[in-house]
Image (tube, rainbow over all chains, first blue to last red; front, top):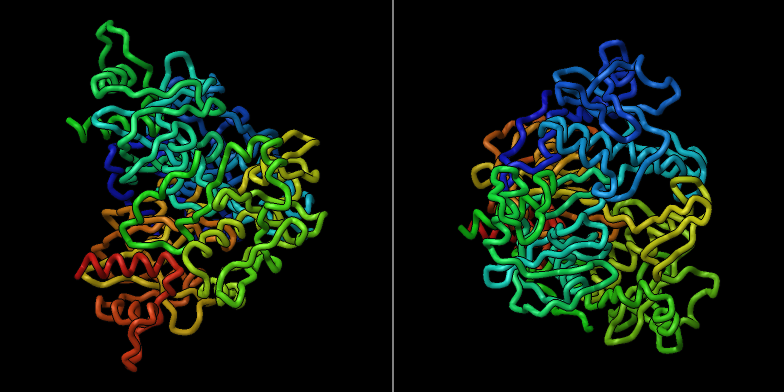
Length: 309
Length: 309
């Protein structure tokens, strides 16, 4: 069976890192013989420099063959692309830092086309997980990949481990036509974005949104609404984009998390988003630097601007 | 600062395991002195029998004091309840099986009130994570709890580990007034529920829904819509409830995952849900056994029945 067409785009419009053209081909993944039969000279291997994509002069992801990878490296099966099996090799080391603290990765992802960005993001999350999970969290023994790299098994205690995806809420908060945005100390100068935080065990998406806005800005929100999600590969978050409203305006900042949080008018957001998109440089300084189009925070702001037109 | 009122209920109505009355009190969590000051005779400790709740004759969760727990046990800080610090002790062993394969846990959760269910669920996820993550996945060394049990640190390689929450999509699929429901081989006899599957690295919620329905039933869906989430503590899933439609009706079953999948009419779903709620026993056999009200699949069916009234 071939892969279905992707469902309609999110109501924000395209989301970066979504829309991978790779068919995950779960029936091959779980069948060792079928998988082995795909590991021949026809197989494609995504070329990586550690966790960085190798980008050709044409601006595209570079692919090689199984001959291009260290025979000792662990391989993961990404799926099928135009019926060809695609793999990636697990690098020696993983990385957990935020993308904006990795200038080479940050620059690379601004270059890639939407399908390549989605392929790279999915591969990066998966190989990074392997690189950082070579031992069994339950008993401390070394583990081995299984099911084409979508599982690791412990021969000592028989525990099975699966790639991790951490749900994170990221939220617009509106008060009477203005948006609450914040900046972490590590952001580039003048950059502001939507508040965000991990969903914890024991709470819903809506509860996580309310808790994060309360913890970081001291505001009580109402009418939390789900807008869109983004798979974010630094290292492997499911960014759950939401919109909420508040009747409160006085911000109580959590200085451990944020350096500053402020209300921005619709005009200020529109101006900053236009600059971030690169369509407009009117020479007038924006009130803040908006996130780039690769970030779901950008997509949420864009959605909000359309909604409030 | 006290905890904010919970945001409005999900549009399905109450969701089991959501709405915990505990204030997670992140400022205490991250402050070792503040946390130590709360660990005195006033602290409450949730009494557990391994991972099972201890339920009193009044049907409520039982609480003790720090004197009731093994002095060697790792303690996690659940947060504040009526200004009192609440803790739970990590048991020797965790568990990863589904809830319906644990008859004692399954029976216990049907007894608890909504607030107690939410407290128990959050605590169970957290202590189970500790019990199954005592070693560093990066280097294999033993790790130690930090930040009141919301982190584990590795002194050997300096890795930090955080409680895991796995996003899972669970979806209603409608074709012209009928719902697609399936049964796994391990389900109790006659039980059918919504299809479900883990969100993988590199995909959105909507893409995960489309992939799961394609993989398990061979149907292409459109118009995927987010409805509600539930924190499910067996062991720690974020159940993301969605609704979708399909124009296709011929099911191609993935026999590795499902024993059966069928279309059910609105009348059949309504009858089964009424029985599951316990409001109605008309003596007529239902077409299938619906999930209990503690499952988000029940809430989704209830939402759909209201929507299609």
